[in-house]
Amino acid sequence: MSVKPPNYTGFGAEFCVMTRWSATLTLVIATLLSNPISLSAQGNWDVGLSAGVANYMGDIGDGAGNARNFIWDLQEMRSRPALGVFARRKLDQDGLWHVRFDLSQLHISGSDKDTQNPARRGRNLHFRNHMTEGSIRLERDLMQRPLVWARQRRAMLTIRGFVGFAKLSHNPEARVDVNNVMRDQLIESGITSDGQWHSLPELMTGGVDYSDELNINTIPFGLSAVITGQKRGGAADFYFGIEIGIRMTDTDYLDDVTGFYADPSEMSTLGAALSSQSNLVDLELAGPGAGSLTAHSYIGDEIPVIRGNPVNDDAYGSFVITYGKVLNGRSQSFNRNRSTYGNKKRGGLFKKSTRMKF
Image 1 (tube, rainbow, N blue to C red):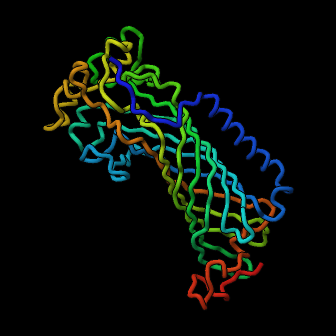
Image 2: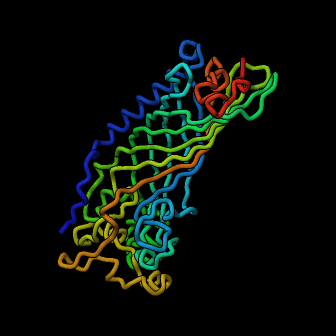
Image 3: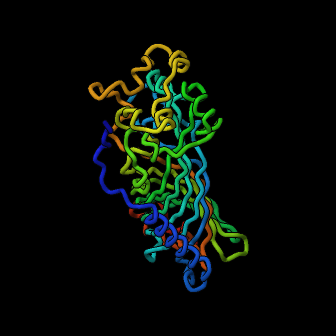
């Protein structure tokens, strides 16, 4: 019997939808870069790069408990690269509101071998996922504070909050564990090789083929801190920043772990090997509380065994450093009227005397 996945809605679009969406976003950014004069005559546009790390929150975590305790369940050592490009446009005269378009590559991974929980350790599952994300988000400046300024040099700290909508293309992978009892047989038959990664959706490791559900919706939100500056004697503004973002998804398949163990007779030999990777060696290493082989494998339709928590969807996040440059204009961070945030009489963050005039 194949176990049905939870009734998730809102995804299931074909891969070509994500491809077209990403191509459109790339075309928009390319257009902005190729025609900066007309688009940035008043400094309304800026473009930039982001680089950092990504991680995820799901069924494979580091916490001692079985529950997903949000970021407390992260496996920090499993953080992987996150890279992106973006274009941002000012929406109002004061420069408080912006819309930003991003195209990013994010990599996440997880392994039960790194957990503190004996039951998870005995389960011995793992994954990696190379993801492409295209997003549009609304940003709002929450606070500003001048750092240093002089005749030829100025800098401003800005705290921003953001929320948006994104489409994500993903494909979880795994490899046959070195202690898997089926490993030698699979290598001898040429089905796998030492260290080879395999795409999981079509292998039905959980009894479900979700290969047509690899393009999903996410809700990105977070905070960023940006330091904006002006090069000595130059007119073009630039900025550096750090950004923490979290994405809530509508899928439980970022890690391929959810629901119950499925009947291995309904899978390929490779699918069966990747579905249940518990073995005597890892059970012994996990120690008391790891359970037995029957606690981490299919034993019959009458007694379903949980493979992963089917209640909560997966999430992922990133911590990145950003660099951006205003196209043919000065950043509104410098010439914005500080009364936007409050003045001395109202007890705001900035006094009138701190206004920077350019």
